[in-house]
Image (cartoon, rainbow, N blue to C red; front, side):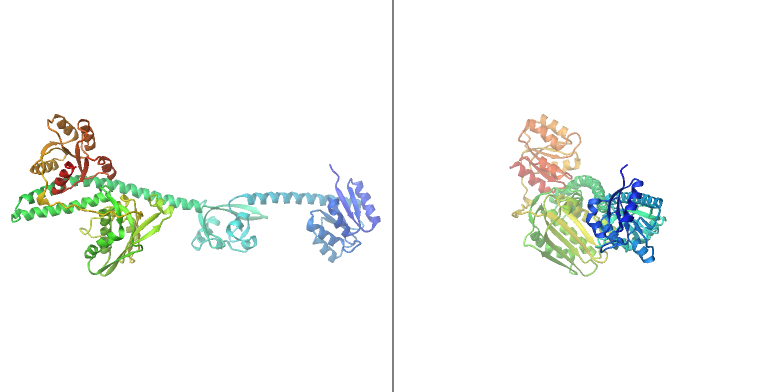
Length: 636
């Protein structure tokens, strides 16, 4: 074991040598004897003693106590005072230097030996304690989460790791002088008190922490009881879960949107199926009504009765169009539209629609706002929203339609399932009506949901708007409070393009085209087949009928005549319309066709009508529209 290296600081040489002799007997190594405090400070680093035996009264300008103070400022070394003085002032001064011993001269050899050994023992214990505390502090500060040491009742801070100071913006002194309640929002103080005082069974409660700057973060607390400086205290770890909570909230929103989307999709399929069957019936009802009106004289008593039937049929057709709009199965014919121009064209009609007690205003941020959409559907959206606004206003009020150009964030675009564009046109329809409660607002786009009296609404207006907006790659949001009116915002991708000029062809039903070609008519609905067969024969065409695709193929093969045109439903048992035409083209590649249907996906129609010799007609169609379409496709 290495000898301990001792330094003697004594200005009386005889006493110093006697102490040295005694130390050598106890196997200590005396590295030097120095009589001046200044000399000790000059030579300290070179000598680097393990322990110093120092007289208080020294030669030179500074005494032993002053020398010890200067040594303690820079070095950690045990010091034992050897002095002939033991009065109160000297003892108080010596205490300030925290000496490891104090021997009054003269002293016994064994007394010196015992004091030195006890000094080394204490020094080693304190060194181990400091090392242990250093490791504890290193571990304490290496933990990534904020750690607080609180008083037993949880009301005061006693200590914390460095993460707390960096994260919350306090200094250690500021933190210890701050009550714990200042870190929490007022609404959570009772919950915090219950948790810290064991009155809550929640293991990892979530709280809102407030930083010195006022910024709020969401934390998850973990508590345990420990002994700190011989006191029972609370150790609390505050894990920052702000981002996790935001992600969970976002996931919840997405899940709710997915659930809502799935629910709407299911109801949409149901609505589309109903529309399909209903359109088949309406095709026959409206078609035969047209036939009867053409055949009857206007003075006939039955004429007006049939006209009422036809009017009701047309109203029913508009209802099924709403169903298809909601289920996103209307046939979409997109063109470049200037929204401002479209709104201006509708303005007069909308004013008549809402009445004189309600004023209608339009404001446009830019001269033109161009989107690519189906114009008739867009008009339907505007009409439905204005009618909804009108019904929400009691007495006098105002409706404002406006358009603006907006750059949307990626987060907004992703959340509302928009496209890849960042630039959008926003249409806003604002009313001064009664507004909506949160419960109503959450269900506003559900089909068949209405707050109107029985018989006053179908509950399809806003769900149709929702379906059309989605079908045209847009998004619709609503802002509303009870008593504060409502605001509907619709977003469509902005495009930079020329406006399409629409040219409508109006057919005069009194002068419908005729023909003599052979037509293969395939539809599984007897009433539609009978109606089409009758009106086409009246126009001079030869008709071959079939109730499904397989029968149609069989009659085509058996026929000795050239088939000039196929008119076929799309969805049929045995064989569908697209499957049938594929088979027919094996025999007659240039055969022309008109598909008819009451409920088909827009993409499906585009796929199967992309051929130059194929066209499509939506059920329910009118008498003159089918006659004109037949002639149009035959004459191509």
